[in-house]
Image 1 (cartoon, rainbow, N blue to C red):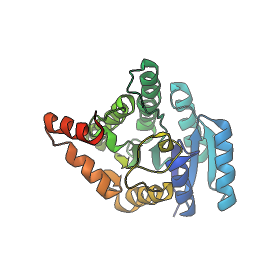
Image 2 (cartoon, helix red, strand yellow):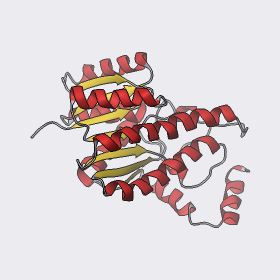
Image 3 (cartoon, helix red, strand yellow):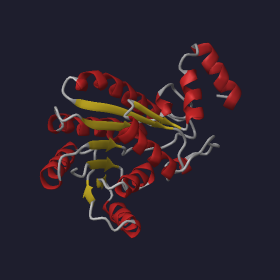
Length: 254
């Protein structure tokens, strides 16, 4: 059976790195991308120290650059092989601790988290057509409803959730499987920027195992974890605004 290929954006750290390691250990061809060449080289070195596999490749790619995204995907398809799973994991994260509206922060997160995702999908939809392969977007439960101090990040994650649901229907007609991944609090460089206590915090390795099982074994549309925190956030979606705002006032005096 031919070895399958996964392309992971944001693969130099956090969930992306741990997921790359997990797929590599399960004999997949793994291609990691990042906009930072130094981080990418260090990630490759760390992965090869643990697994001497010849199935690891790295390709520098800034997903906020439409032309670079196209060149990267076409290079992978032509020089390495057909992408079976595209894990769109790269994201910018900048918590707004002071609750100030900073247009620069909004534009940065829109460029990376939303436009970057769209640029990838725009090319992938053509190369993956009728192959029954998978595009998986790493979103967040924060996209279910608006949270205090998370306007920019939450907005982009809400857009990714909505996009995933819509494209599930549209891409089914052209032979592409859409998936969405909603991790709770995972211990990464990004979440360490948070100034609040993160309940049910899990490791990146925990997330990687859940992602692998969800994409390869269970093949569910939505992969979310840990169950308890994401389930609670899902419940918040059905609350009327008055009750929802009241709860936040009690929780954090917002």
